[in-house]
Length: 222
Image (cartoon, rainbow, N blue to C red):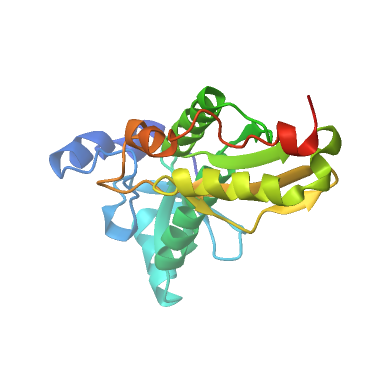
C-alpha cells in the first residue's frame, strides 16, 4: 500500500487515449479489473470501508482473492475511486435503478367525460387520450355525474367501457372502472403496437351517431 505522496498526472496517464484506442469511450462503459488504466487508485472494500490509495494491481489481487471484481466507480477524480464488489450484481442493480427512475418519471394524464357528451367533444377527448398514451403516459379516465344522472350509474359505466374499447389499440386497462361518490374512474397504461389503428380510424369507427348518449329526455334534465 502507498501512503506517500502520489503524482495525479501519472495516476491518470494513458486513461483516455487507451480507452479511445480500444473503443471504450462510451458514457456507459465501466472499467473493471485489468481494464482500469490508472496505475494508482483510491480503493473501497466490499464492506464500504476505505482501504486508501494503492497500486491498481494490488487492489485487483485483493478483489480476486475475495472472488470479486475491482470496479472503477468514479473515473473523473484524482486518483480514480474503485470499489471491490460483485460486478454482475452491480450491473443488475444499475439497470434496476434506471428502470425505476424511468417509471417514476411517467406522468398521469386525465381525460374527463360526462354522460350527455356530444360526439365532437367525445372525439376530441379520445384524440387527447390517444396522444397521452402514445407519449408513454398513464391515463386516468374519469366521468362525473351531474344532478339526477347519478340515478342511472349504468349509463356512465357504459360510456366509460365504450371509450376504453375505442382506444383499446393504445391503452391497457389496469383495473375495472369504479364509482367513488359522483365519479367513475379507471386507469390505463400505454400499449403501442405496430399496425395499430390511427386515431382517425378510431374516431371514424366511433362517429356513428349525432350523440354518444342522449339521456336528457330519460332523466328529464332539460
